[in-house]
Image (cartoon, rainbow over all chains, first blue to last red; front, side, top):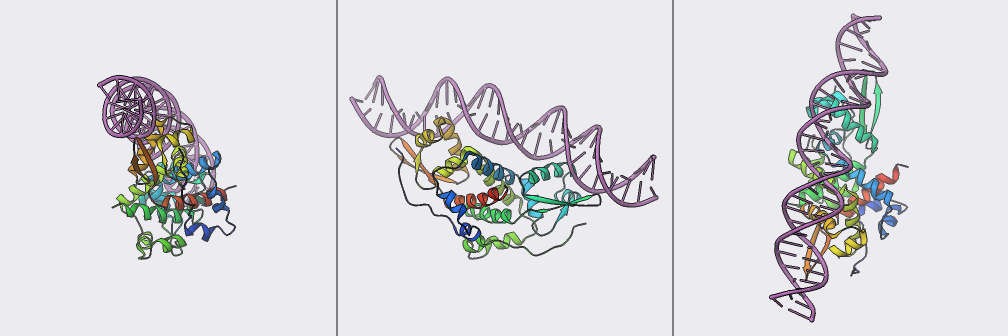
Length: 126
Length: 126
DNA sequence: CAAACATTTGAATAATTGTTCATACATAAC
DNA sequence: GTTATGTATGAACAATTATTCAAATGTTTG
């Protein structure tokens, strides 16, 4: 039943960010390890929430403390803190304590790349 | 309270896929439109499920019908069909009817790019 | 026509999740 | 020390979601 077809084509991003072709090799495989699937799902699930998207987007240029985000998104600092924990657990943000404030910032630039790709897709559906 | 910091840096992918700088312009903005945030969240939420990741990954090279996927993932065709509907609604897969079978394939290559980026992030946390 | 097959759909259930509220903790100011 | 402030946490609730089951649709074959 299973049909065969053209070869895998991975977009430029992987080559740009993946000098030793690690990602490309994984993508070539017929199936993914269960753990990789699980971790990928966790990552995308984490980004797949409006509040967390707003938080990540707000952090794209400057670090912000919980109460900054609380004011910016007009939500309780408890709600923000809960969401920051999810982002922390998935290594999407890092934090720095200063006095009684805790400043959060993006852990790396992957998120912005993912946003860019996501926007590509979202804007295409019109 | 809000601190200022360095300028926005968008990764190569946007430039590669975004000749008219549409994405770059959006990313430069301080905040995203509510609708864009919502759509982005829906997209990532859709990809953020193990079953759907496996489906998308299985479709990366060849189109497959529901029962192919059912056998491959060892799940009921009903469960697969439900998940394919979610993927269809979010324009991640397209389908083609042939006889009594329905063949699904990836709608575009954005998903593979997102996977590549996601893998980057997932593999970095070790 | 009937029977077999592939897929879809709707209802039901269990599981997960986001927010709120109350409370706890840590740090700074008095 | 006490009080105020910023943040984190746990329990509770409502809302969403993935899968199962049963039934329905549509297509092919006899």
